[in-house]
Length: 539
Image 1 (cartoon, rainbow, N blue to C red):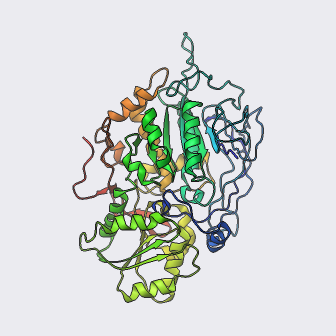
Image 2: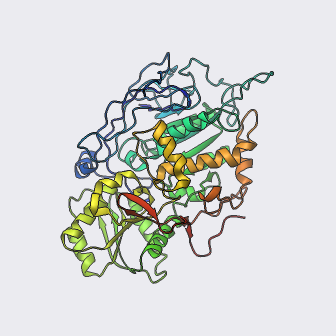
Image 3: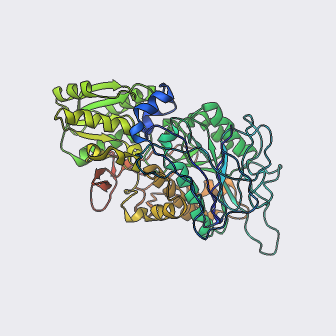
């Protein structure tokens, strides 16, 4: 069943209901390209301490709903400059944290047979809702909430999303972008803050007047971490919807489409880093830390920057093969700076208790527990250790760096994590993300993965946008990407660049943070990046 979501910026907020019950947010790399092998009910029951119950939302006071919209249980829409989607996840009384998202309101669309599964739109004055059809066809922008016509069937990939305005100084044509990944299912909890951040960003950017005067629309496609769905969605967006680029995928099956993107020369700007393939494609322009070697260095840099402890206990999940793959990648860098592994265990995310593993780690002398598990399991690891009077430092990767982890309470206080940007919840540099979420997605999950959307969007707006003319094209965006050299974006990046025709030198820099008193605090007052030895931006 297709699942499309619009969020844009033209003045109205439409109520929606989000109610998917999902597991606590897992480490993105531990589940790369592969869903959990556990039965969903069992996994959910084990992690129910992290469950969020969602209230039905209503439009903000004084905010009119869009006229002429039709309802669909799989669609949420927001139309109008400066308004975002209401009805994103909120915390009901007595509930404590796992993600939810499923259902919603509204969008007018000519639903045709063959629509790719999971496609939603968010953008400038339009929204779409496919009609539960099979993978493959149907433009997601076939209709709009305001009754404005969609893109003509003859538009070529990389061309304008709508006809260019005629002479006489009319409004500029829109920039149509795509994004895709797992928003539902078990891995929908992993992508967590990314999809609502994309919705908030589209509203935020349109409220500012768009990019270089062009309104912006983003189509979101929920692939449920199924490679076939991923390819079907991306093909539809390129060949039928005519997106000119992708913005910040939240995919765990990116490898299913990297060759296609390379063949079509359509860039993917930004990512949650859920698939290591993103580090090995010339069409994935990821400004934040790379999910492969960069992520392995992220663990080491986070630990060495924030503690003098050297003996590591490695805990990683059994459900996804890449948990072991990523841990092996990490171990290849050992010993570095005196860090050594003294204990290693593969565990199940469904275990209600990790006492045996924590006792073994304690006997082995492990001072730091390096975890590739999900948020709920990190809490249970800490609880199991603390019950035995064992108090190691717990560490993890940036996907645990989100508000969902707060449900772990005092047991997770002191957790050290990688951050791909200055801290999303406390840094003045990330205030624009928090402000936009407060206005457009006030009940949604927040975290590093959401902050990353806004950093990628800022890069597109400020550094690439000035090169986008009328009509907007893929070639203009590629030109802007290749023009970047040692770009820091005012301290949001360590300095990035991209090389034409090659994959760039992946970012291997992080801002180490610690969870302290319910806030993520950077390792130094400057919120500075720490980089792998010898790393430098692409020339």
